[in-house]
Amino acid sequence: MTADWKAELRPSRVHFGAGSLRMLGELLRELEARRVLVVTDRGIRAAGHVERALASVRASGIDCFVFDDVGENPEERHVAAGVTAAREHDIDFLVGLGGGSAMDCAKGVNFVFTNGGRMEDYWGRGKAKLPMLPSVGVPCTAGTGSEAQSFALISRERDHRKMACGDPKARFHAVILDPELLETAPPEVVAMTGIDALSHALESYVTTARNPFSQMFAREAWRRLDANFEAVLRGDAGVVEWGEMLLGAHLAGAAIEASMLGAAHATANPLSAGFELSHGEAMGIMLPATLRFNAPVAEPMYRDLAAAAVAGGAAEALATRIEELRDLAALRSSLRDCGIAETDLDRLAHQAAEQWTAGYNPRRLGAGEALELYRAAW
Image (cartoon, rainbow, N blue to C red; front, side):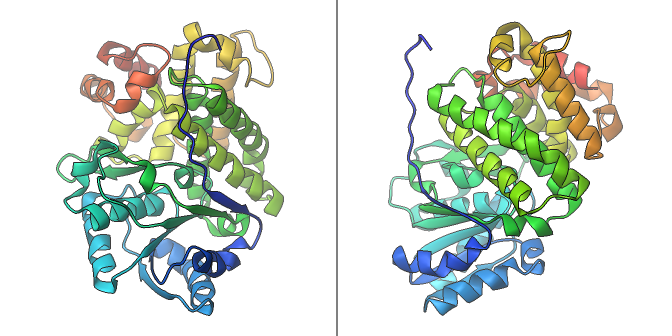
């Protein structure tokens, strides 16, 4: 690249391997934890992963408590309830165990528990003035890559707008990547989180903040995710394929940390906030349109990722590939299918243009361009 660039990289300790959740207690002891709050959700608890984590932690002589009231797309109220639990148990360490929602909520609890106030006070970057608690992230889905990022996405109560709250101190001090944890995820969760991870790799690769580090992570993430997603969707994946998906999602999360996201996320977020579409399904609808929209400026970069050329070029090849995987995952393919009226598109377009990721898209994304994307996806 000829332009000047910079990247802020603060790598955590990453432990990868089947069954590696068993080392959680030992890891926490090394990090001098004494009273730990595990932030998770009830689905993860029902799958048995919380009890396995607790057994490891307690075997190391560490007091451990559980907050399992995290909801999908965590809101301020989930963070507030987690802070109450943290204060009740006088904790000195946090563990985020689950999907992106649980890990984001754990970061949110960390902000408010250590620095006071409310979640909206930390909307933006670097607004935590006091030290924050050490923490460990343990993903149970191959999706958000939240364990590799310093941001928490928390929905504001009054309008459901997603607030990106980031600080280097919020990053997990260590991460455990255990492929065995993914095998219990419901098929619909596997489908939606996988599409999300793919979108992270494709979007972060071409943002205006891209750099050699972010592109290295994104390129490797795309390679692993694209090669293994079909197997997990078909239900015939083994621990190797699950491991590749988990590592791919983690690397895509690292790419986001170094380069942000773009128009697909800017247009997907208002769909989740206003129409309660799951994030993964919204991404599956908006990503192909975004790839085609970005082609005039990003086609040379897309050629680095496209496995095979088609008549329409690399952007078209990637968009077609996402549509194939989306169809295999049995996700809806248009906004019309989701009950969104054409008359809703203009309002959505103005909301999309206000999203923080819109400014990082390689092609300008104002309200007019966002409307063009929504019409293409409708």
